[in-house]
Image (cartoon, rainbow, N blue to C red; front, top):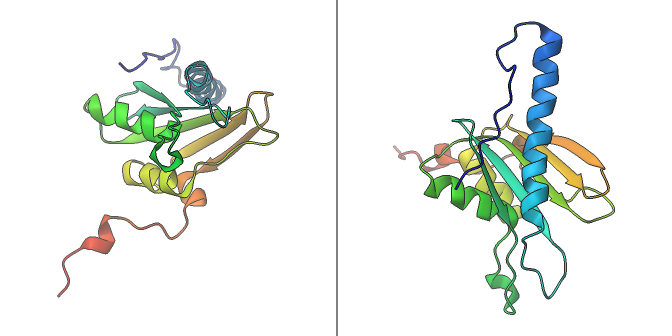
Length: 157
């Protein structure tokens, strides 16, 4: 079930209020990722990751990594969040947050970068964070330049 993380005051018109609101939305998304990270199943690596994506409707969908003793069969946090978004009926994401307990912010793996690119735009903001508070702001396009997308599948003449 998606989280409802809308904030009051979203309709104010002055630039500072809009900037404050945007920062608040990102932190709320990060809070959702932080919360779900605690539920990660990582008995082998002990490396828990949480992710949250905001759908075009404004709803927040979260996921955590789920390991398996057969390592390639695990699920990444980002993939879990995207799966919940799709299962809930949305197909577009507008923001992403990922958090892990690491010395520096951890970017999504290559497969998850492609998954994010499938459902977001190149300029979709991505907030990467550590549990200690370090953050890195980037975009899907910066994480996956030259991405493979539907335009590459267009009909050949």
